[in-house]
Structure formats: C-alpha cells, structure tokens
Amino acid sequence: MVSAERLGCDDALLNRLSNHPGDPVRKYLAQQYRAVLRGIPWEFTLATWWAAWEASGKWELRGNLGGQFCMTRRWDLGPYSPDNVRIRTNVDNVLEAADHAGGKRGLHPPRKSARAVETVLGLATTDPLDILIAQEESHC
Image 1 (tube, rainbow, N blue to C red):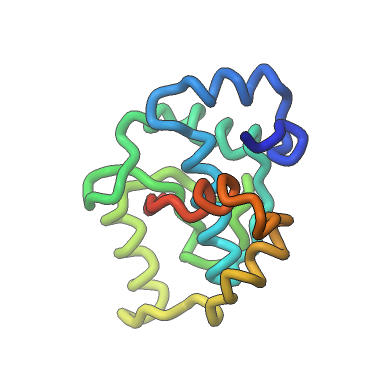
Image 2 (image 1 turned 135 degrees about the horizontal axis):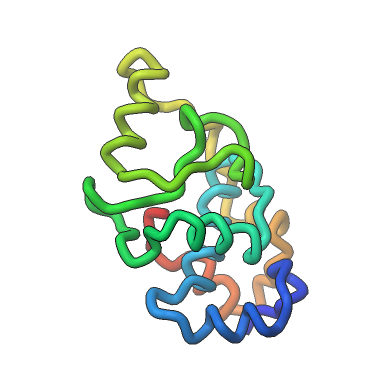
C-alpha cells in the first residue's frame, strides 16, 4: 500500500481510513490522479482532504449522481486546495461552472499524458498497485 508519508498523514489516519467504508484512500488517490491528468494543481494531503469531507458530514452521500455530493472547486477554477473547495451536489457543481462559463464547458487546460501524471505524482510505472489505485474510477 502507499505510505502514510507519501500521502501526507500519519500511520494512525492511514490505518483508520484504509478500513473506512467507501475506501477514502483509493478515492483520494483517484481524485488526485484525475486532477493532475487534467492539469489542475493538487494542494491536498490525505489528511487535509479527509478533513474537508469529515467536516461536511457528506461522505456517505458522496457519488457520481446528480443529487450526490462531490468535492468542487469554486467556479471550477484554481487548484484543488483546502481554501478553494466545497462539498456540494454534482448538480450544483455543474450549474455553477456553466453559469461562470456563460453556459460553455471546457474550462480545463489540456490533459497531461499518463506518463506525465505518473512523473508528477511520483508513481513508479513498475508499481502497478499505485497506478491501479490512482486510476480507479470515481467522479469525486
């Protein structure tokens, strides 16, 4: 498994989240991977990311459907960081981003290649577990 040091948390938090319903560690890695792939700066550690979810009280309601909750960036701009995210419904996220873009999507910079993402995240291409964890499908 990925080390607590690499994730920016202590062993106790990593152990607690590794056994938590909904597998937060995999969700964190997947969201981080997708953000970097989309060229969006990632300024969370596992500890700060989990703190945002825990404070929201919405972890159990998290998902890909319209009325479910996800971590959103304000106006779909800037980095994923503790100061720039909110936990909102997917519908609210899409409406806010579309409103800000004048009804147009496509606010993201060009995607990076998987190799570039592996380099940015420090993933060893010979370590398939890290790559599989990071590539796990999850919207938020």
